[in-house]
Amino acid sequence: MPCRRWRRWPLLSWLSVGLLFHGVLLFVVLTRRPAPTNAGARALGSPCRPDMAVRRLPPMSPEDHTMLADLLMYLTRPDPRTCQKKLKFGGIPIRDRSAAYVDGHKYVCLDPELSLLTSDGCLVYSFGISIDWSFDWDMEAFGCTVHAFDPTIPAPNDSAGAGDVSFHQYGIGGRDGVLENSDAQLRTLETLVDGLGHRQSVIHYLKLDVEDGEWAVFQQQAELGARSVLAENVEQLGVELHFMDHQPAEQHVTFYREVYRSLLALQELGFYLFWSEPNPLQRPEWAVPGLEQNITYAMEVVWLKARCIEDAYLEFTGEDMDKTIK
Image 1 (cartoon, helix red, strand yellow):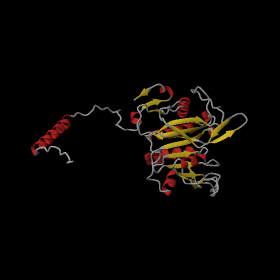
Image 2 (cartoon, one colour; image 1 turned 90 degrees about the horizontal axis):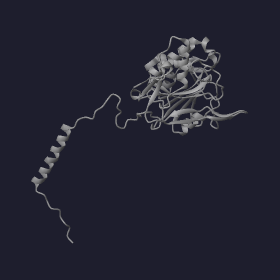
Image 3 (tube, rainbow, N blue to C red; image 1 turned 120 degrees about the horizontal axis):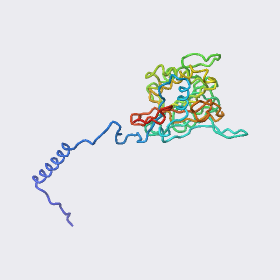
Image 4 (spheres, helix red, strand yellow; image 1 turned 135 degrees about the horizontal axis):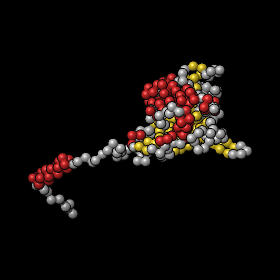
């Protein structure tokens, strides 16, 4: 049975159809008007959420009691809209006669504006291990390369301890040197990152649990500003903050003002708090004027570096708590 042939069009007919098509296409291109835009509009496919919001630390008040209230309100009341997808890594269950709780964990934000979830080379720096490797193991199991640092413990052997986590017997400090009244070696974040060859890499999560040593790190990073590793490399910063050695607060105003300046500098680098919780090992005994409830002298907080801040709602703490600007 012979195949049926399609009717052949004359060449002139094909040329006419082609010219008509190109004419219509040219008309659409020339007459198309751009869709209206505004400064707050998000590009199609942008990872920024329409409900993204952050709480800002306001300018430091000259009044000591207002400064303390603003600082601690900021540290204990992050806006829940700053991070939508939070996941807890690590933690050791602890039980005593009166309660059971988990300690040693850190919360990580997995929102699409951050690259931890999608990166092929997830990188984590973890400072302060002691006997708890749970956070480091969980991050390594999640697919991250983890570098753990602690100058107070020996290097683990193959049968216990670090596993596939890279361990370094150094601590972090505001300068290179030796910890006071100790032989523990301290290095700045810049020295450690340069030594490991990560200055051009994203550090997706930086964990600090260094027993009051975090303040020297904050101050040193604030002084470096835009040249710091926090500014150039770090996406998320999880820290256990310690205030026990700086009580009563009214007698350590100079310390708290320095902390305030460092956190303002951190905010200028684009970091915004998305998680805060009291240390489970402590009772909330710290009464701060201006706060409705007592707080603990140590707390777990986590910042993220927000790429979407230009389109976010900004909320201030303190007297401007209810003021929202866009």
